[in-house]
Length: 359
Ligand SMILES: [Fe+2]
Image (cartoon, rainbow, N blue to C red; front, side, top):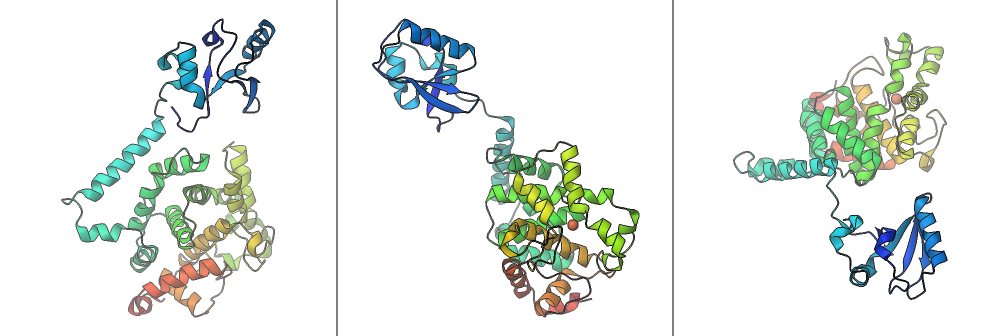
């Protein structure tokens, strides 16, 4: 039984032939999800009112008794709690059950001294800077991706549709060190670095990070076979359609997403100075998580060579950003919060690491 419930439902038969009740009777209207008083305590349930009540029930309305009057109802109507289906303990949903198992298994692994040393346990604690710096220095995002996966799979399905979807997607695919999973992991940690830590926001972000480049599948070949800075005007025009195409495909596939997830997808190329697209939104008019995803995807695209044609390393990119050495195609307008998060990363890397990795 849900402990937050304020009412419980009873059948009309549970009212028996009684005419006066020491509890209130309400009606639940499934059409609008509201509870309305029908008969206050100690007011007679006349035959006309009882007939109307039966009519309401036959049309889908439900008789509801306030939870705080449960004891009075059970005693007065001589009904046992187990005879009221709505008072029976709720079955655990399979998603809740799975989540519980994952949390337990994570706890067991963390507490097993034979599997993980104390030192390793310490390393596994969340440290945005260290996690990202290690991934950047080694060009291996596996542990970062697994770290994010462990958190996302335990998002409660009770929070939102997107926390459910993100945890299911994470369980199925968030483990290989591939481009999409790097985008998911980097944007997740960037969001955390910006102080966006609630599962509802992170669930929206993770889902958006899996779907935001679905539109790439509809782009002409000219967008795929050369670096972005070499695009002709017409190719650039086609390429700029990809956020809208992603949303179009999701709509066609009838994949239901939260409004914020759709906003993140649509706005991931908007930039803080208003020079982005498709709507040239500026500053606080842009969904903050769209800036997060935009920064993460740009950094990964740039460092892989998709933007300028020359691959570089994450430390080199960050250092150039810090030194304001802007290379062709490099985007920097993601807002102060994200810049600060990235600046923390620079502080974490040793200068020898940075010098070693600069292309
Ligand atoms: Fe994009």
